[in-house]
Length: 180
Image (cartoon, rainbow, N blue to C red; front, side, top):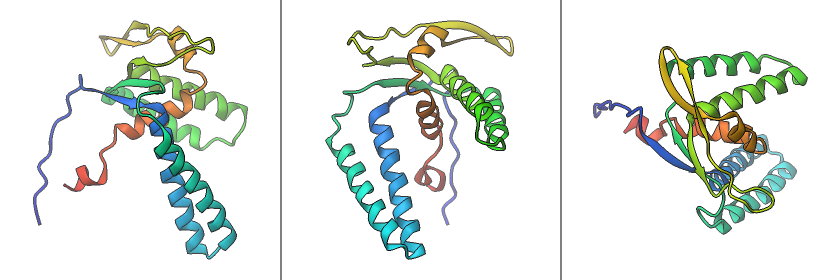
């Protein structure tokens, strides 16, 4: 058995998250899981429906031109803030679905996005104008940080919930990295 050598994370590291590609990849993974579960249960109708949806999701992903949609520049969320966000995720998961859970989910998503997005490109208004990225200074634990401005966050409203989930997924180690 090989000994896994740990590595450090550069808090200033950033990477790009192509929103459309990430959403399409997530859809493929979700439908693959759904197909597997339906097969395990022996539910032929559910398996057939899920396989059709999986084929459509794969076609969407294959037909997407990388970088043609919004691309977000993402950075690490500080450990303490990440713990707060994780705690809120657990608290909101215990709520019944309704107005309160919707409100808390939106606030949670906005917090994830504010603390991790460092820029964007190819984000356009309905009229086709490029949406400007604006950050604002905020102090947290005595350190001033640049966070997504409230105005820029408003421009993300159509995608903020999906974006938050994809951001957190992009910050996890994959199986290969964990077990490498």
